[in-house]
Amino acid sequence: MHREKTFAAIKPDGVMRGLTGEILRRFEKAGLKIVALKMAVPTRKKIEGTYHATDEWRRGMGEKTLKGYLDHNIDPMKELGTDDPLKIGKMIEGWIYDYWQSGPIVAMVLEGIHAVENVRTICGYTVPTVAPPGTIRGDFSIDSPVLANLKKRPIKNLVHASGTKKEAEMEIENWFTKEEILEYKRADFAIMFA
Picture 1 (cartoon, rainbow, N blue to C red):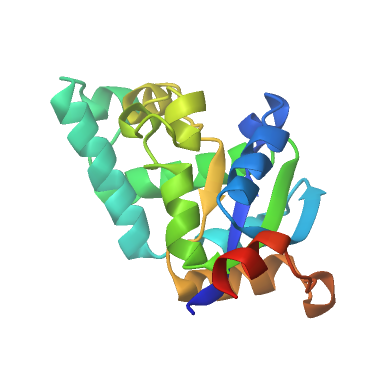
Picture 2 (spheres, rainbow, N blue to C red):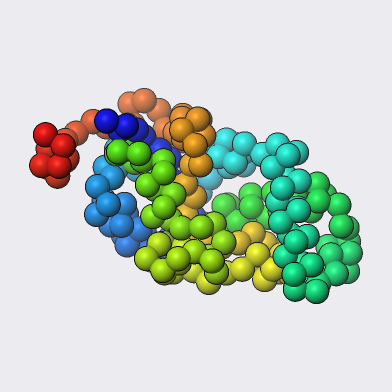
């Protein structure tokens, strides 16, 4: 029945704004089961195990930044000292590590029907200014890539969610031991799918 597990995390801005309960509530109300949960200030190694950064990923981040700068008539050479997408991507990667270590995060494993896709839908598009209302990012964040880059920080978008089943498996293993992932039955699952 396409029941799967996925990884999600409430980032420091979500925790520090007191949105942890609201975010967990949204996942549970959507029929997702929380099977593992912990609060931590992540190490660099944990963050690296979450982002799986490659030069292709870094270059993509840099290209998105350059596009945003072009759209808003901002000179990347003046603001960042370079217009090389890979160099910009490496800067952003460093900002992401600093951001994740700026306060506690709440890491979790969620289980449910099409969990990877459903969690990403509940979170909303990664750029909050274009995330639709009704999503976590659309309802609680208004940050933009251009503002973030001008401030030399990543977008503060409240949550992280695995993008694929493969990423979910790697991220779950990065954050949780098998013993920390619990099995139990939710009443609504029996009602919906029995």
